Every structure is written in structure tokens, then in C-alpha cells.
Image: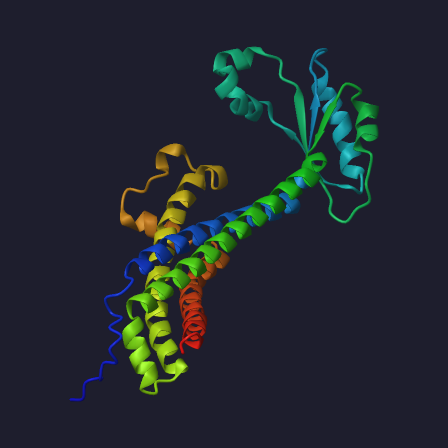
Length: 301
């Protein structure tokens, strides 16, 4: 059985800390990607539905709010700009306000009548206030569309911050890899000079060191991706009460199957981003080592 002939560089025991640093950088980059996916998803949900929601509140000071609602609903439903208009049941209003008003106090208060309205897409702007004022002069209109521009800008800012964090993590990984390669060359200067003097090409020496650096980068990238996968799974469980209407008591699953179900249902684009992290770490290790070694070898006499 033939054994590979060592070239004297002895890279196997060098720079094992590079893998740990790359793992940390990969985990931070993956978490930033998770933040980008979340911000993008929230922006899409807002533009798809929430921005079209309108709430109309009719005070019940004269105990005629329900009559005004009955007169107003047919007018709203006949408007081409309105997709859906429904009265919010008083029982639901009491249920929503119970944590703040209490069940007994909330039942004793004359709550306003509320209409939930959804605007229709691809329709010209309609002055809902003028339509509502005809049947309910004292009505208060709350349109989410007024906040649409600000929330859209907020979503874009969050996505930009996430990409900035990914770029900074990648830049830190490049800098750490370059420093590690330089330390390896400084520690193995004499063997490298001997190999170079015996006729070893720059490409051969660069490939040897780049192969070692890329392996450490790949191992660190895999470890960082798995670490980020676990943390994103925990964050997904914490966010479930805001997305799936799950009670706070059922956030933490009783066995591993619950965790696995949550981890396997992460957004597909986020899973693809996590899967690309090890490859990017390998690419950074290979390319940075190649460039650094070749530049260093050109300075040799």
C-alpha cells in the first residue's frame, strides 16, 4: 500500500482555531440572513394584506351606532374600491379588550361599533371618509395605508442592515483567513523556501496551503450553519404566538419531535441560504489562501 510522500509543510496541526472563528462568523452571517428573510416576509405580508385594511369606529354615545352600521355597510359594499366590509361583533371587541379593561368593567362600557374593511387591489383611490361621513358623521377612520410608506421603508432598512451584517461577517472571515495564512507562511518559511528552491511551483505550494485553509473553512461553515439553524429554530418557536395564534404555554415542545417539526418548516429560502454558508466559507478559505500565498511567494528572491 502506497503512502503519500509528505512535503515537509506539516499543515495538519496548524491554525485549528481558524475553524472556530469561521464557525462564529458563519453563525452570525446565517442569523443575519434569517433576519433578512423575516423582514422580507413581513414586508410582503404587509403589502399583500395589512396595508389594505381599514378600521371604522362609530361612537355609541347616542346608542344609535348599530343603526348607523346597518345604513353604512350597504354603501361601503357597493363601492368598487371596497373588497369586503363586515361589522366586528361586540363579543369579539370585549374579548380583545378584556386584558386591559377586564371582563366585568369591559362589559359595563359602551364600546363603539367597529367595521373592518378591506380595500380592493388595482382600484383608483376612493375618498372613504366622504362616503362614511354621509351615514356616520362622528365615525373615526383608521387607515393602515397611511403607514404603508413608513413601514415599507422600515422593512427595506431592516433588509439593508441584514445584508450589511452578512457583508461584515464575510469581510471578517476574509481578514481572519488572510492572517491565518500569513502566520502559517511565517511559521513554515524555511520549508517553503526549500521546496521553492527545489523546483516546487507557486501553484503547487499555494494549492497545498489553500486546500488546508479551505477544509478548515468548510468545517467551520458547517458548524456555524448548524448552530444558526438551532438558534433560528428557537426564534421560530418564540415567534409562533405572533404568527400561528399559539398560546405562550405551548411555545416549548415536550419532546424532540416538536423541535424537529419546527426546524423542518423553516422558510425554504432561509434553508437554502443556510446550506450555502459552508460553500461560501470553503470558497473564502480557498481563494484567500491562493491569493495570499502567491503574493508572498513572489517576494522571495
